[in-house]
Length: 113
Length: 114
Image (cartoon, rainbow over all chains, first blue to last red; front, side, top):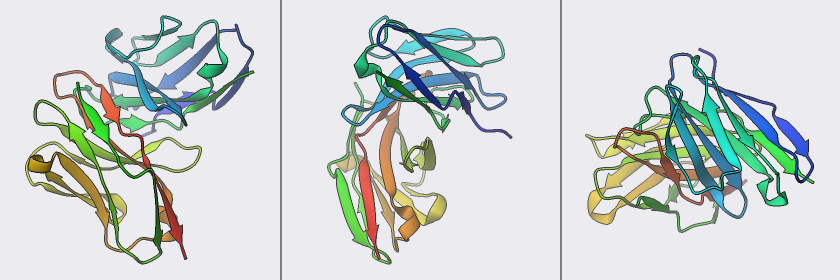
């Protein structure tokens, strides 16, 4: 079984731009969660999608949004990028969520300049 | 709200020595508890998990963890550390209410000296 795939692996953007990150979960997994990892804040939960619906959301501004497609693939979008958005963005998939085992992708390293 | 505390930011051990990484959690019900490991520039790999049952959980790479409800702890142990264990370790608590929201501790960076 293929693991969780995140694309791209690395991204450099300019302040004010927007960016879209992609996550393909493990086949059969319907829950996809997104996390932001920074040295100062650690791992912060962004949101979780299950069957194309956002079930839970962390404390991030509205510039951070996401969606999930019928094949469970998910995208997250960050608009009007700020320097502080530079981080490793991790995607995790699980069968149904609800505390079940989550498998992480390798992440997308976003640098905002 | 659920929370996780890893009191040790950085730990250094000699290769072959035993290891214990501390984790305390706060959660109103029976928690789902996890330990993940992250190598530099990589995603997180699950070492072990506790959902219910036996409080001593065995994981991959020779790691084990013990759930102690009375102390709200879920410490990770390994009897003999290998140089390849150098990485960052995260304890996490999951919500059992039907959706996925895992709260992570701030991590413990493990350095292994020869």
